[in-house]
Length: 428
Ligand code: SDX
Image 1 (spheres, helix red, strand yellow):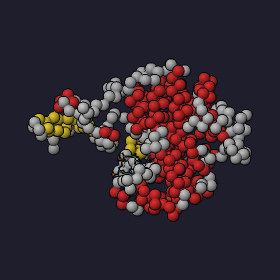
Image 2: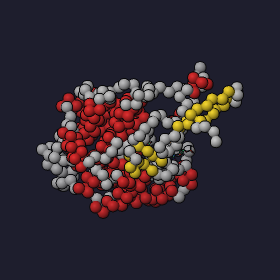
Image 3: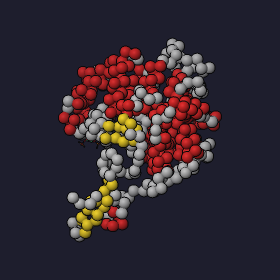
Image 4: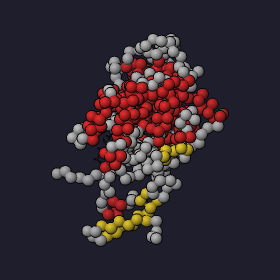
């Protein structure tokens, strides 16, 4: 058996180059090719980074073959619905779950940091009616950099902790206010007597003056614990996911020494794409477009037709070529809530028919196209009376602890460099 190295040979010249193989604690090893261009005068070529590790990380582990997702080593199945979302945020940001004392203090701090500078609220007014909340959230998050110019020194952990907790606390407020502004309803300020997830539902639903009603359909429902628990589990399932497109964007912008909240705003921009977090909104539109179980075969055929740009939203994943463990957890949540939350059984029946048809079709199975997290979240969010344009904003709220932890890890990595890939030039 040879050394822990890999040799690459250029058969045009017979020249060989040897590179170290580095093993992680779990998952695939890497070939360290950092000197490859200096050695060979050539670049490696990997558009979309299908075979590229862009960094070393200790935060989240995914095993696509074994449907495994772990936050700081803890399987997602042991966290979703078992630890509060805020405790999971603490885990991702600090490396361990909080003690009861730490959990209480963290919750209290987040409640008090959930308010926005009045200047940000005036920004919302400047945007047109019916502006998509994702655009407003990106603008408002970018604008936070005009207010917060302190706590930016990554080598001062106490400072950095404030920077991380601030953005976590304010995102639900930004999201709820972005939505209310888009429908011309006065903003509701955070209520520090309510836990993170309940507070978001409150800010989304309450009438001015704080009286709780569902916007638009009038009956005066207090927020039910089952609703808070369902949304809390959904946020946990979205909290981090290794080096996905939006996290890579947050790291790339952070690598240029840009402000942390500007980096987060770039993550919001990347997540909005339909191939990424924007898929959850597209899934619901697609289920409504399919309209009836009898139409499912038509849409399955469209998804398989290479001449048809139609793709089955909520299916497929770059890493999970088997089941997405988060989708599994959401399916369990769906089954549990079907009665309690009066889930729309018509949409559920269509979703179940789509899943059944796809998973018995070789086109999907041979390509490892299984339902991903976005396929199931929409039906539950609909039952929570969350407007469809708030589906991706909820993904943003959930992903904040992941983005800001990955950003911090980059800033505290002494070997980190500015992200600057090269190209294969085929122009004139
Ligand atoms: C998220 O990376 C992450 O971790 C992301 C995420 C996170 O938590 O951050 O998990 C969140 O973004 C989940 C994915 C949500 N997106 C969708 O549901 C949109 C629909 N799915 C895709 O567009 C697609 O599957 C991707 C973008 C998710 C993955 O794309 P890949 O890995 O680049 O795969 P590919 O485009 O190369 O597809 C491989 C094959 C192709 O067919 P062939 O060329 O081999 O014949 O599968 C086909 C594709 O045409 N294919 C699909 C399909 N997805 C892939 N065909 C029909 N419907 C689909 N949904």
